[in-house]
Length: 199
Image 1 (cartoon, helix red, strand yellow):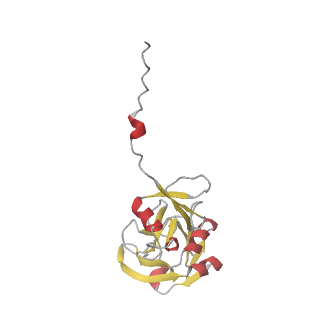
Image 2: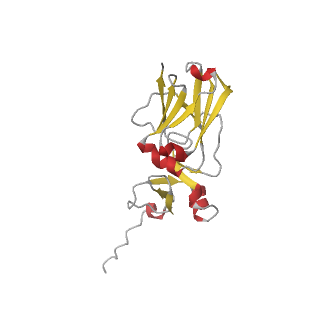
Image 3: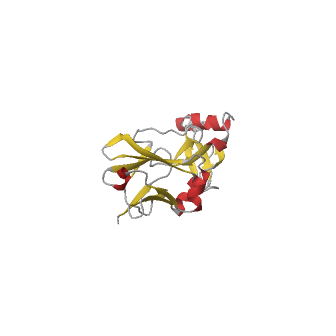
């Protein structure tokens, strides 16, 4: 009698649990339109998120409109809430506006001592994120060597910035010496650039 062939053994890999992954899919403005535990190539913009974020979004605890995807708290794209914008003096939440603009710059600030104005312009690549941002953009002018010494606060509505250049006049003599002051903002956009114009 012929010996019966044994069935091939299944590998243990087939029985190993697969760590689930979760994704948000968003448009060019960072607005979320889909949350899923399945990956698809049907959409260009996606971000992998953790389970807690996924549960918050799919359970209805908060609507998708309360969240955006963008460069809120770091140089890396992340999911963030619009309801609780945090202004803190931690390095990871603030951006120092001090570098010259380059191709990655999303918002350009000009310190113009000739006309005694701050001039704010959003780059084309930064417009979608500014359009989706519902809060005012806040900038702090402080002493260069003492961030606790606040000279003034500048607030700009996103709609004003999208319409045209925003001109903010200097308010004090402190602002006329760019070497003694610094400009700080909450990190809403990926990068900021500073142009210095003397007389």
